[in-house]
Each structure stands twice: as C-alpha cells, then as structure tokens.
Image 1 (cartoon, rainbow, N blue to C red):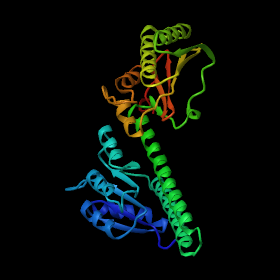
Image 2: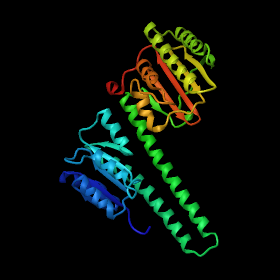
Image 3: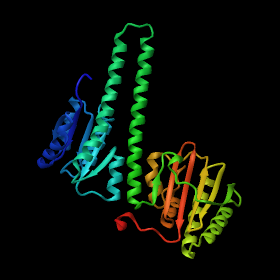
Image 4: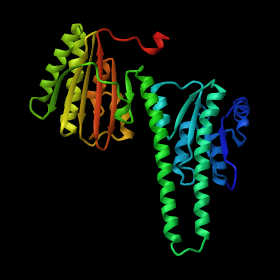
Length: 340
C-alpha cells in the first residue's frame, strides 16, 4: 500500500474521543479526530479515510446530517460510516441512520473488542481495495499494447467488488435491524438456504393462479391448523396471514405456488413463492414495517398485517421473485427480551 489507512473519529465530547483512541490504537492505524460535523467535512477534503466513526448526538450539525453531506460528495461517497450513539435507539432513528448511509449502528457504551473486530473488517476491505488500485497503476505504467483494455477491466472489477462488499454489509445491517425491531418475528434471508426446514408432515400444494387460489390456500392452512390443534384465534390469524401472502404473490408475482406443512406436536408452516420482480432493498424496511406503505413490487399493508398475526416470518426477495415462510404454533412465543 502507498499509505496507511486512516480512521476518522467524530464526536463533540473530548472524553469520548479519548475512549475511541484507546480502543482503536492497538490496530496500528492513524486516528484522525474531529470535534464536529463541520470539522469532519473539512478533513475529508484533504485526506482519504478507510472508515468514519460518527457520533449521532452532536450540537449544530448532528450525525445524520453530517453523514448525508458526506455521501453527497464524490470523494467521500463510498467511505463506510459506523454510527455511535448513547441515546438514539428508537426504530425511526435507526432507519434514519441506515437511510443516511450507515453500514452499522453501535450503542454506547460499546464493548472494545467488538468495536475493534468491526473496524478490522472495514480496514481489510480498504487495504484490499488499495492493493487492487496499486496493481491497476502498475499495469498503467507498463507500455503494453492492451494496457488500456486491462486498466478498464481492472477498474470495472474494482468498482463491482466494492459495490458487492458494501451491499453485503448493508444487507446484514438491515437484517439485524428488522430482526431487532420486530422482536425476532421477521428474518430477512439472503437466500432460501437460510430458511427453516419444512415441518415433518406435508399437508398440501396450491398453485397460485388468479382465480380461487387464495381461497384454496386459506382452506389448506385451516385444515393444517386443525390437525395441529391450534386454538381458534391462532388458526384464524394464520389463515389471515396466509391469505395476505398469497394475495401479494397473485398481484405482484407470476407462477406463484403455496405449500403447507405441519408438526403434529402443534405448529403449522406456510410457504408462498412467486416469480415477480421482488422488493428493492431500499424499500424493504418501509414495505415490511410501515402500515399502508406500498409501491410496485412491495407488500405494503399486507406484510404489516402478516407480522402482526403470526409468530415468525422469513423473507427472501430479489429480481427473480419473493418467498415468504410463515410459522404459527399453538401458543405465541415470548419475545427475546422477556425470555432473557
């Protein structure tokens, strides 16, 4: 590497900056301090940084506004930002941080080793990116006939890898936030390999054609609930959720299908797949949590209702389609915070 990675630490409280320095100093990278959002923006004009640790609660320009301005600049647009906060743990603030461009959100007081581990990941990403840049520069300096083609390919590979790495980090952050704010009811899956295993007994398969499909899936789910011994309110909620999932597959997708499974000890599982265009990642949080929100390709009001009525929901969505797995037991499980 031509120069060591720098980390920008932004906090208006000197004691917080001292604590961050002490935590990150063992990593051996240069730590640059800023006491305000304005000072951070000035420092970003003159140096390159591998990572920004940004406090949310600052007087004047707070962390959200600072992050937004950082992302508006071409030079600093792709620098990862980790938000640090001692107060803001509300769902709205968490999603505001994600919208502003954060890749992680850490509450104070933080565990030093956990913070160092997260920072190491971004330093490794930065160093690998710098190595690719250095290799591209060596190729540029060589007077080869196909040098221009090689440089272009190298640059495209670099940009594609960077976008994929950032998308991976943001997906993981969004998955953790959704799982947390729904008290473990919603799990965002990157592939169907992350879904639970189907329950032991297959009850039925339904082709989700436009006419009669929703009713058929409702009837199949109700029959499974009766065999599993779900109480009236529990099976009624399950049927409502299955109906909403099937409606989404019929309206937004194509070639949809539903599968219903049960565990005789007292649980029912409904799988709904479609081949629609899925939900864009920037719409997932609103589509799943905001009542009444809907755009083309999202589930809007229906998905909010699904989360309100069943125990667990697993969601995988993308350009090739959407799959939802719904689980309902005889009794509603306790939320993680109550079990703890």
